[in-house]
Length: 404
Image 1 (cartoon, rainbow, N blue to C red):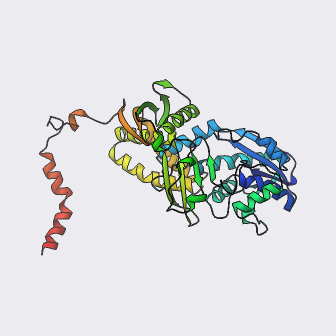
Image 2 (tube, rainbow, N blue to C red):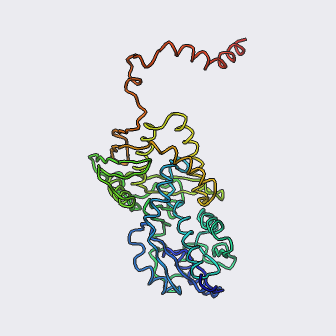
Image 3 (cartoon, helix red, strand yellow):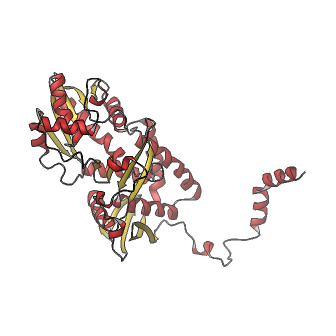
């Protein structure tokens, strides 16, 4: 480990509005030597020129790490297998990325002998919790610097941040007229702010980035087949494919058909309701396919209990509790349930929907003989009489009492 440099901090740097102004602010107000850390998580061309921008903004160093493979295999796949969806719609694209970024931020801080780590999350949002819980879990000795919660920090609106960027000649994409707060990675893109702050406003079609609006989706459906092994997607249309590639290709195909657009008013951890519009085309296709294959291959009790676990898992991901013992324990349970989640699922993509168009599995628990309306030797209908009497006995007794 390098010798400690008492004024060095590692900033989680995206090149977006918040971190672009925070980098020079930290240097200007506290005299920190700022190392900018940027994670390549599938942002498209957003990281182009980021080193040049960070150094021009005052960073002493900018480290960019390609984490797409780890993001897909060690974060997205466990979450996919768990079935985690937050509040019926949000597929947790931003939430699941933060612990990975923070993990490498801590690693860089240790390698560079920095005294602390910094982030640009606001004091109202969830990201502040996700970053800071990860810092605390992985290296509690590091100082945590969160400018938005510093009384000296005056850039507490996007308009003020934009003005600060202009004064300091920091190149940014945002303007007062185009002021969405966006977060993009391999799994999704989120949109917040501007007209979306009023739930009465319909999202504008021009806002969408990863997908067509439904009005511009093709009038003909498209089919894709996804092959799973133990809950993990490994094939697309019969061909072996890597984790990053399958998400990228399904994003492209699903986006064309407007799949995966959700408009959610969600409950933040800090108690505030916020509205976000999310595009998760590939993730939506994979989640729907995986969920259906589980219905084919899991027994009733396991499936129903796993659905309860999925709610807790989603809550923990949302709340930034990735690096805690319970999440590891839940993964152990989930991995046992996935041993037989193997097979092929055919998906139909059409006008914003991803629906099942058939599936097969060597581990299928579906029996044609049992499911058929024709009675056979496998099922004796007279057995149902005694079963129903006992199953409904408590209701019968209650009914007799109430009748009196």
